Image (cartoon, rainbow, N blue to C red):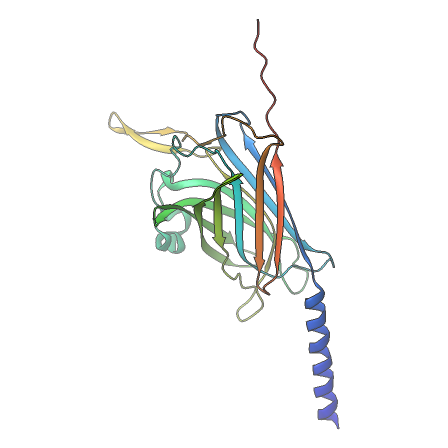
Length: 260
């Protein structure tokens, strides 16, 4: 009888857990900006997102993020990514294992740990670096360095794919599982802040027999702003197979008045 009671109790708990998971609804918000915010200017693209559930629970772990960027961004003049970072060297030695001229940007993330009081802890270091191209497409390597409460050094790839219409390119990123503890559940990413561009980046070149520091040229803002501003959108896929989408717009910069 006791064994039967335990079995029934376990089955009820599993059923409640499954029904709770099925009821969870993921939602996301996206924000983006240009710095400097001028038409045709070399810029640093800042973007970030927040993921939550309507029930107030931690969202399931992310598996894929697709960021769509506006048409007309000019990649032809950028000097970002003059060197290539080897993913194996990045995994083994961190950012120090890659050339300074392979850095593309930086950021941070906040994660929720599925036990104890570990909600809202930050992964303070996220670096974006130029990886080996794939089929002619630009590849961005993201390096996340977590120390506590999650100790993890992760490398994951984002591939820049061409698009048409209002979006000119897509950064398709596969997110690896982030373990909380050995054999424990994976943590949930709840927010990310990141940049792609020359802000706070220093490159080096040889000149007159010595290394000279310089700031790289970023991707250029389009020469014209579409009505309503520059559109960004993002699609999120979660470990349980659910999805969330969100969009935002960078407003058109103010028109400069010519002095008479």
